[in-house]
Image 1: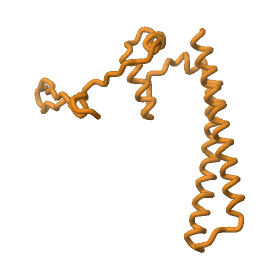
Image 2 (image 1 turned 30 degrees about the vertical axis):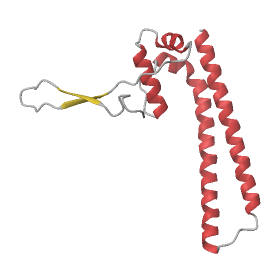
Image 3 (image 1 turned 180 degrees about the horizontal axis):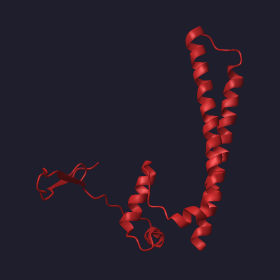
Image 4 (image 1 turned 90 degrees about the vertical axis):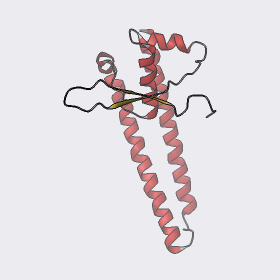
Length: 157
């Protein structure tokens, strides 16, 4: 990061002491600023509803980083339960396939390291792995399309 952009800077404050407790420092990170593309602010404000934009952006960042996002509208979750269950089943299938691919790759590596020779059927194994990965990519594209449809339907409603 460029010097002077606030990277690595923090502000520290001390909370007022409560009798019988030691005060603890509160550390806040410097804010992150960005200029959204045209139309992004309007879409964020629509999605935010009554909430502030910073809450919506914070939830989006947490989701991107893989943190648990707890601010979910229960009625929306209930309305989407059936559609999301299908997507969850598809993701479980993908996970099962990828675990098998990983196990297969480990077995091939172990064979190569142990015997120091290429197995006769290595080309077939690699073709099968490539086919499984192509299937996984197709399933992920279908899941993305399903999610895009759900979002479009809910945005209109």
